[in-house]
Length: 137
Image (cartoon, rainbow, N blue to C red):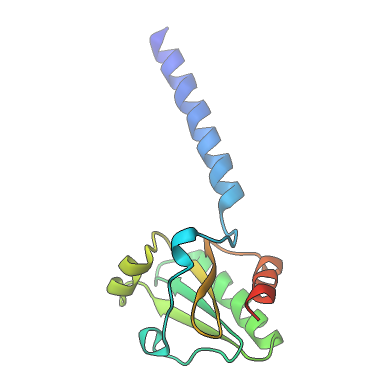
């Protein structure tokens, strides 16, 4: 009987974890410690956008990174002065540690000065990216 109870508790906890993660995955949100973080063109290896920059941290084996690359590229193409910069997380470990990047894709929305405005872990939706850009520009 104890094994059945343990199995039931594990299933409930796993379900709750999965639902919470699905709800938070890809949401662009503000984090208090990101507010003071600024990135420069030298750190990213490419110039910042005149109005905003979409920074994507990716890895070679990451399947959602491909779809994220496409979404961010399309949004950057729609809005003048917005650049999309993709950073290889495996090659830039110091930057990944400093920014506390825990998974890929992670997307940062920067304003014109390089200050982090929004952050998303996971694949963001196009509407959320456009909305976050509205705040940055």
